[in-house]
Length: 246
Image 1 (cartoon, rainbow, N blue to C red):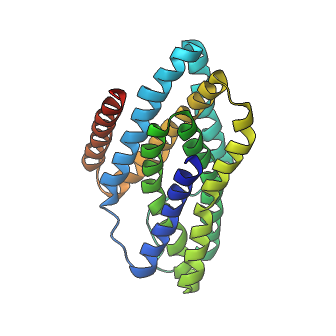
Image 2: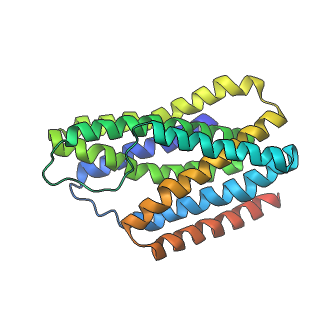
């Protein structure tokens, strides 16, 4: 199930590239609400559910340590890897777009590896959390597919090639899940799983604040983004509350 959920999240990048395939000039402002919702889900799950559960297993000091380690890890990856943040903007002159599109695709492909690990580890820890996290990451992967395919198509006029490259970038997400399962699953214990969950919580929160919320504001406005965040919080409150009753 962990691998299946990660594969689903990775496929969303391909969906984004297909949108660019059929709609030459997509209006992506509606994604402001969707990305805000995804951020709300990720933040709530990271802080309220994962971190609280980790604290009960590891204690507050270790929970803080591994949470901070997750923040630092994803920050370093974001700084060191040539990852161009998605903004949905296309250079009308198409100057140097091909190189920029290739760099964006490579950056997103590498950037998706820890996201795949995130979905896999959360799903291994608690499947009821893995599903909303996979959906949240899938929502944010759709514009990533657009960010890959639009510049490449504009530069080459080859829709098929641009879509295939975008799809390949998304498929590094299940690769990250496979690496997480192969490397960590044989050694998993309650303590190690809690530590990994705290690390993942930090990664989720960083992705939300560094990428989801700023990009959501750029597509629409902060009020629409905030409504999405509140909706994400609300849905997770209800969902986790109902699941906790069973």
